[in-house]
Length: 265
Image 1 (cartoon, rainbow, N blue to C red):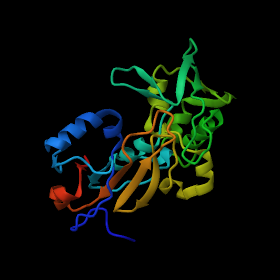
Image 2 (image 1 turned 180 degrees about the vertical axis):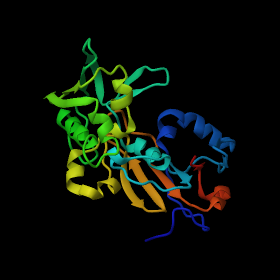
Image 3 (image 1 turned 60 degrees about the vertical axis):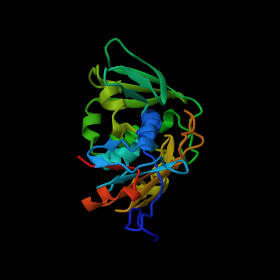
């Protein structure tokens, strides 16, 4: 089984957290070097991470990475490293193309058509295309989903127009369709091949398209993801990201064992 992710001996897997990588890496590294950074209310370890990785210590373990059933900060924090939406929404209401590069909406706000990014593959090699989007929404609106009725009350049909075009036909007009049903975290894209292969175990063997890919999950110990060198947006600079779980709050003050500590709300 190996040593725990956080222990009295200071044994860790050096890891990184995606939002650090994508948006705050320069500032984080500067603060780490000066020993000034606080995340939440927990003190940071001094010194920059070695070997291109960083430890993130957390209080609670994740639950399931089957996206239609995802919930809770510990799960979502790791999921956002592995998964992506078609489109995301900024605080100011503007939208960012991610797995979809452009989209149009009919005048009555009931038909939304998305052009998909070409050449993207899931971490298992499965091609990301319109058929994959259709399958994901079948799962989102299916019986095993926590949001099935909410989605199916609005979405009447999802169809692949061609390999790189998907069309949503709504039952009712929805101005906020992207925010509520496309950029929502339960609309992260999963590999249909992996879902089929793993069945009910998929929640512990996630496969997405994001900048990091799943490595291992030891319950109540660690979740490790590693750099996706084939990422369509360019490979991240850091190599690994791990959330290391410790339920005893005393771990928060063991500086030698972590680079970032997160307190769950």
